[in-house]
Image (tube, rainbow, N blue to C red):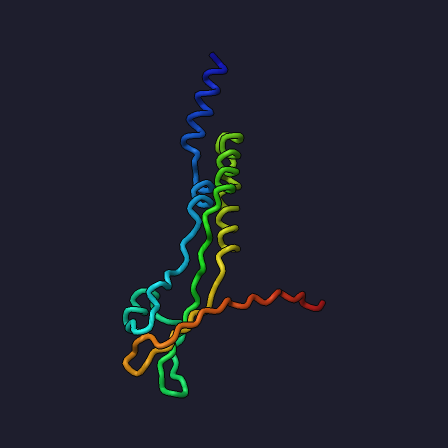
Amino acid sequence: MRRSMLLAMLAICAIHSGGCSVFISAAGRKGTDTSFLLPGVERTTVIAKLGPPLSSTRSEQGLTVDSWVINTGVKPNGLWAVTHATLDVLTIGLWEIVGTPASMVGHELEDKKQDLTVTYDQQLRIRDVNLAMVDKKPLKPKPL
């Protein structure tokens, strides 16, 4: 009787503890959609989809140049999802206390930033698109 009660409790916990860490790892995170950035697309469409640019300048030729910093996203990771699910079952759901924050921090570390620069022609239609990884400079220790 006691054993069947324990198994029932484990089953209920396993069903209800398919918590955040499992889904965070299994789903990944979508990056910024840049598939629509094609020559000829109007600036108003770009701003509607990406939001206002971080900077907007004029080039030497008088063309408008907008810049954003975008996210590349994080690919789903089935192995981590299975690991989190296993730890959820083994700890009767207590793993979520550690697993969910760890998954969130891991996604933040994996999600890379890119500089996106869009140059428009005189009619404010896309002429050129450039993507470059944002340089992350290592922290230097401060002298004592």
